[in-house]
Amino acid sequence: MEIKRIGISTGGGDAPGLNAVIRAIVLAAVQRGWECVGIRDGYNGLLLPENYPEGGLMTLTPDVVRGITHLGGTILGTTNRGNPLAYPVLGEDGQYHEVDRSDELLDAFAEHKLDALIAIGGDGSLAIAGALADKGLRVVGVPKTIDNDLDKTVATFGFNTAVYFATECIDRLHTTAASHQRIMVVEVMGRYAGWIALNAGVASTADVILLPEIPYDINKVVEKIQSRDERGRDFSIVVVAEGARPIGGDLTIIGKEVGQAERLGGIGHKVGAALEALTGKETRVVVLGHLLRGGKPTAYDRLLSLRFGAAAVRALAEGETGIMVALDPPTVNYVPLSEVSGRMKQVPLDCDTILTGRDLGTSFGD
Ligand code: F6P
Image 1 (cartoon, rainbow, N blue to C red):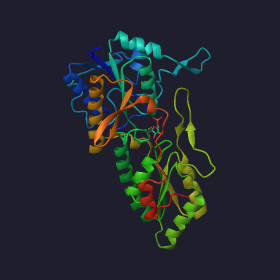
Image 2 (image 1 turned 90 degrees about the horizontal axis):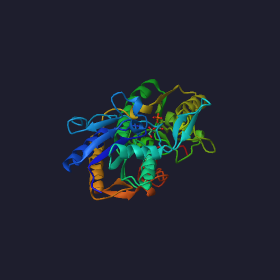
Image 3 (image 1 turned 120 degrees about the vertical axis):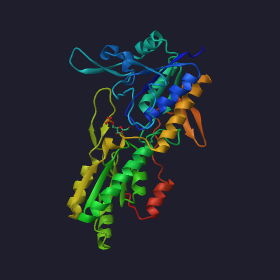
Image 4 (image 1 turned 45 degrees about the vertical axis):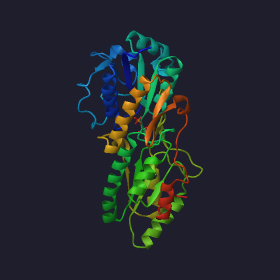
């Protein structure tokens, strides 16, 4: 079937580069004579149109996407509570229940004459995209996450920006830590993977880096800090991934609501309190959190986003469906969505960046 009109959605947590992907899709699609429609807030623009006085869909023309490549966030809005396969619906008991609304969603695509979908998102959004493709919708996925934990692509856009900004922040903490002879603990996002902590930690020459992939022994961290003290290096920088956990211990979780993934966070404060108690050194904790998701994308992420957006349109034009565009230097290729969902890419323990950190004397708490 010939494509005339496509829908674009951004789902899950935002990441710098989303707007660049949207711009590339629109320009590449319009060149092929297709119309583009943005779906507001994941799929809510189609599932809850009554919530949008101006309409749950946005007509996207080259004029609408002009000048957005460098802007953080997403002009379409996003949500991590809008999974159409497990949609949170308020029941008569006053509780939210997860309901499968995917058939309603497909009806809405047909009603609005949307011939195909480009779904931009992380593991959750790409699993939804795969399920919609299995139900017959023409779908191409675009991988997004600052966490870089998606398999089958060398990188996701947003990650480079997060690492760049975290590195800048840790540099700033270095100077104040040194002035006050303190321990500075910096917690960074990343869910169950330590890519951001590892890359920003090594780049900023942190003294200790705690990753989800390497459960830590707090006594090893104390040893590292004390050995620095003995050498007259009386301050220390400890980078902690939000998914880090002690040997034999659990993840630190803020909570979980219906229709949402569990929220990680708080390990930085636990590590900070333990280090202050065990070393007697004054300790401060900084949680970078959503600062890593905001702001404008780096040149690397902009370019990757533009490449992904254009490749997604090429894929649809070539008749592809049920695939994700993926970075496989020097090219962007296509991988089946079925090979992506449910496969988290964690940091391999023998990766060169961990070896580099170890060779330079960084402690990983093991
Ligand atoms: O996946 C991106 C991410 O920023 C994670 O690093 C973090 O755990 C999560 O999203 C937080 O999501 P939110 O605060 O939007 O629920």
